[in-house]
Amino acid sequence: MSLMKPYTIRPAVLREAEQIFNLIRQHKDDLISRPIGDIVQNIDRFVVCEAGGEIVGCATWQILPEIGAPERASVEIQSVAVHADYRRHHIGTQIIKNILERVRLFDSAQVIVLTFAPAFFSSLGFRPIAKTQVMHKLYMGCINCTKHANPFTCPEIAMALDLSSTGTKMCE
Ligand SMILES: CC(C)(COP(=O)(O)OP(=O)(O)OC[C@H]1O[C@@H](n2cnc3c(N)ncnc32)[C@H](O)[C@@H]1OP(=O)(O)O)[C@@H](O)C(=O)NCCC(=O)NCCS
Image (cartoon, rainbow, N blue to C red):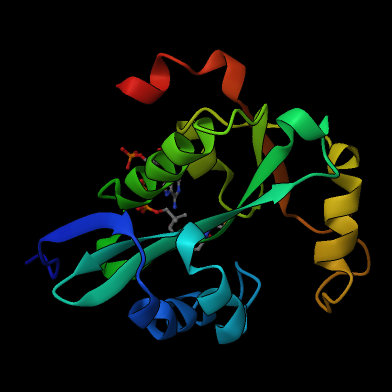
């Protein structure tokens, strides 16, 4: 029997910051934990999946002015998590598509992600890129990591979605 309740995908509201914090923290092996103050401060960039008053999925993004020309700066997708009971029902896909629609509005050239779930991002059109293309991001994100001696031996995959070639795909 499915444990899933009816759900909606939508932008987060401030009162959901604590649940987002807990969902991210439950995925320590896959995601960098975020302080709750950081989530509150950036709540306007979180998209969530809510089911019966519970946050069962989330993701956010950040503009990276240091990657690409500033007028078409890259965007990084971060903190992508779907509760285990709700996986493989395309909830993650809907959350990321919602974010991509919003990112399209400000004409970024590409969206990047550093991920341990490459099959998921491949299904959304992301393709692997060399980690050397995101050196600044690696430096900032990996500097406090204690799991791997350096970002090039870490199994996390760098991937990118070229927004200039996905115009029709976004509207499916
Ligand atoms: C990665 C994650 C967000 C996917 O969420 P989800 O809602 O289950 O994903 P979707 O149902 O939208 O998957 C879409 C497609 O991605 C691929 N996919 C998703 N999860 C996969 C997995 N574990 N293994 C292989 N392919 C996978 C499949 O092609 C899938 O389509 P299909 O089910 O029709 O075959 C979820 O597994 C998760 O929270 N994992 C732990 C945290 C994490 O790794 N986050 C990503 C780090 S950036």
